[in-house]
Image (cartoon, protein in one colour):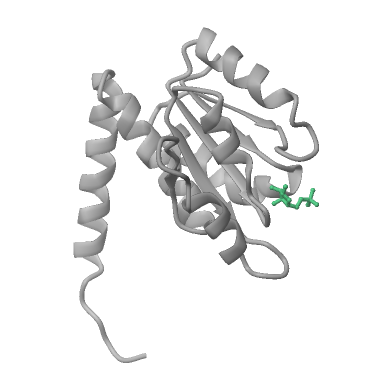
Length: 162
Ligand code: RP5
């Protein structure tokens, strides 16, 4: 299995969640992505977490929208760090997803990211930073990414009228 397991509640979450996968690719971190739903396939949650632990997954990224119980439920079944990504929902634009993920009870931790694509990308980045604490190559890639980002901002820092 890969270093990072990306889980999501529905295939419909993939356009957002693939931003995590793209970031992990850019930073040289292996990943695997699957759909498991807290509501539609609840029995798969504990077995998926057990499999992840047995196969040396280091970080779980979990995205869901609406009544987004997936990250919290996964966290309840594992000691692995879980990063929750609130996926934008049709009716409430992801505010429901955010509040469903962020307000965990004391004693079970989920790292909650921003709503949508930026949150998914940053989940990939943060997962790489966690992997990088024990993998010097990944740590180097993260540092290079940050240095390149800095150079891009500086190179485009002068503003003119349209
Ligand atoms: C959640 O319900 C999923 O994470 C998704 O964001 C949302 C809608 O799912 P679909 O009806 O598009 O399958 O469980």
